[in-house]
Image 1 (spheres, one colour):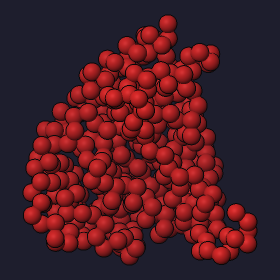
Image 2: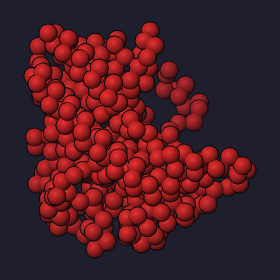
Image 3: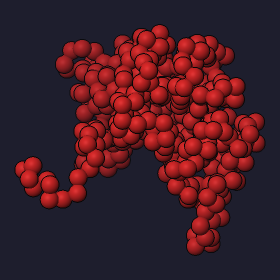
Image 4: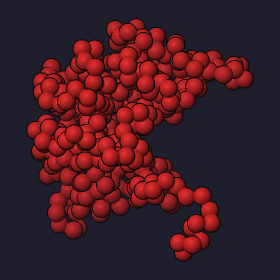
Length: 368
C-alpha cells in the first residue's frame, strides 16, 4: 500500500505498528488429536471447587452490572494477605494493571527499565504509552541489580522486575530487591511482578508486601491465573500506595472486573487448602522433572516456579527447534522462548503426572 493510500484512512499513533504483538502459548497441533498443553504455566490441578461453585452461583445474575470496585474480591485478598483493602486494586488480569501503570506514569520521552529476559508485556505497554523501554543484561539468567541501577537516567520513570522471573524461573533474594529500591530515585516507580510468588519456598524470598507498605514508590502485582487456576476469568490485583491507587483509578474502566471473576476469585483465595495442595504437587514434580532432564544431559535453569527452562545441545540434530517439533507430533506442547533470548531452549509447565512422564519418555527417545 502506498503512502498516499495510507492517508485515506485513520492511522494509529506513531510507532504503534512497530510493536511486536504478544504471542500466547500454542494450544493445538494439526493432525494430533490429544495434546498436553504445557506452554502457558497453567496448573494441572485446576481451580478450587469452591471457586467453581461461586462462579456457577452467578448464572441468575448476569443481567446485573458487576460491582465496579470489586469489593468482595478486594475484601478476600485483604483478609487472607493481611492488607489494607484501600491499597488493593483489581484488574482484568495483572496485564491490565501493568498497562494502566504505564499509561499513568509514562509519557513520550520517558523511559522504563526492563531486564533481558523479562516478561514481554513490560516492553509492549511501555511502547504503547509512547515511552522508551531500556533493556539491561541479566547475569546467569538472573536479574542484575547493578545493571539496573547503572541504567537509571533522569528520564527513568518505572523499573519492572518479575520476581520470580518468567521464562527463567529464577528469583531475586529480597535483600537484593531492597538494595535495588534503595538505589532508585524517589520519583521512580518500582513494579514487582510477583505472579508466581505462591510457588516459592525459599527463606530469602518475599513478594514485596512490606516494601510497598513502607514506601511511596513501590507497587506489587499478583495474579489468579497461576496457583489459583483461573486464567480464563482474567483476575489480577495490585497492592500499592494510596496515591498510586488514586491516580490509576482515574483511568481504570468502571467495570473492568466481571461478577463471576469477583466471586470465583474471592472463593479461590480463601481456599488455602487447595493452594497448599497445588504447592505440594508442584514441588514434587518440579524436583522430579529437574532430576530427569538433568539425567538426560540437559541443562535446566534452577526454578522456584511451576515451570522449567530446558536448554538443548548445540548440535542441530538435537536442538530446541527439533525437540519442539518431535514433542508436538507426540502431543506435548512446550513453549519456544527465542523471543526472550533463549533460541535453543524450551519452557515446560509442570503438568499432570501422565504429561510429565510422557515428556521425559519422549525426550529420552529424541536424544538417543
